[in-house]
Image 1 (tube, rainbow, N blue to C red):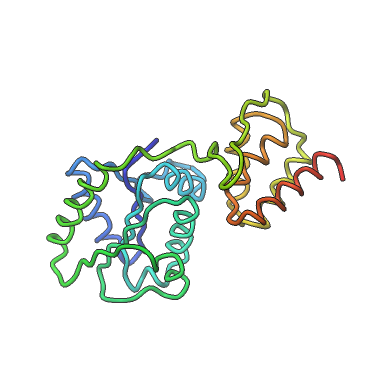
Image 2: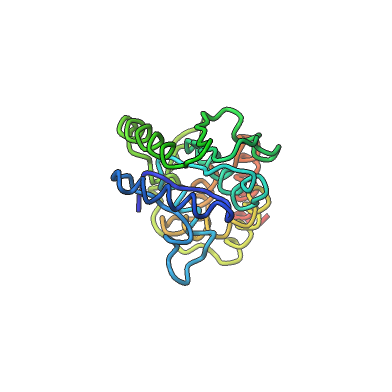
Length: 227
């Protein structure tokens, strides 16, 4: 389901994050936040990835705790990969760690200090009312986007069963480049049907960098040919 915002936060900032969400939703802005919006018994990582893919913008509740949070870093990294705009909402006067600075150095920041927090939240709501109203709807079919710098992905292949052994090898090749989220992305891509080549073409945009995408596609071609 599409939503306006994905809110990322570290556990020490939970109270501030949920106060922000309450005020945003009162303004009519739809928000996804964990753990509230994670379905019961769901795959947590899969839900996070889908929520980021279906958002129009990420608001990062940023603090010293964010610098120490591996989960925040993974969410920010995924948002950058999806070319999702990120708005850091800085509730403490701290700078990002090197691992976050790499992803956030070009972002517009909004400071939310000194306390109290509420006036800063109101200012953020006013900004988002204008910003979201002026943006085109987010493309929630990210898996069908054209390859950057290449031809559009062909999703017209007839549905067909992909050999389980080939599928596992494809997942391994993808995991080499993007990590353990590969399994979820492969399962999601399978819903579109098609043969092994179609599946590989659908997954290639998940990899950063044209050279790595080409290497992945070549590896998948060899898998299909049994080489």
